[in-house]
Image (cartoon, rainbow, N blue to C red; front, side, top):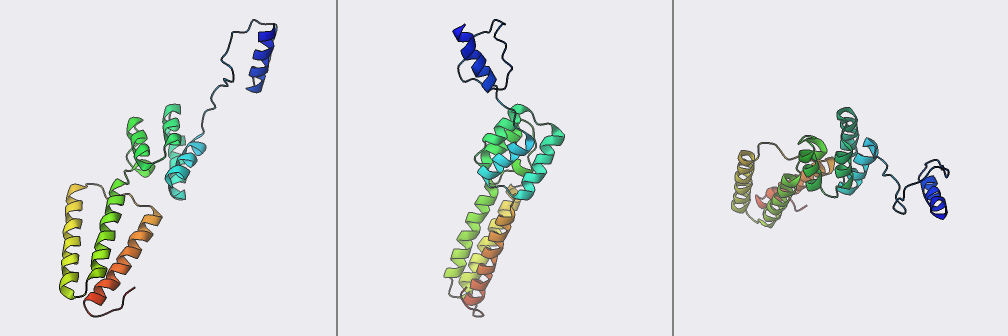
Length: 183
């Protein structure tokens, strides 16, 4: 009878009704049934960990509800701490390759390349150097377009960072060609 009181207490803590007169099987201590994550909780948890845009979070909650993501799919998404993990969830559970499941690796690569081009452009002191950097950047862009069928998925912050890089690069190019000042 002592075991059944412990079990009754444990079940009551999990929200189950106690029925001490019925024989109760032994249950692992502290084992409450796992609560199912809602679409909202799932996507918001992933959004915090992977720094998703609020708009992407809202759209993804709607997709989850409309498509009826499985419990395992929601667990995968909620556990994601990086974009690559979301990409894996999207392909594993056939949730699609876009939205929060888009591969952002190409955006990171592009940001790194543009930062390098900005630094090179801002180091130029004449128009020949500026033209060389501009030509290299054009060639790189053409190669990327040929190799990547889908454009990189960019967040609002990505767009702002790329815009700022472009502005700085333009100012540096003007200076190298004799028509501007350093940013």
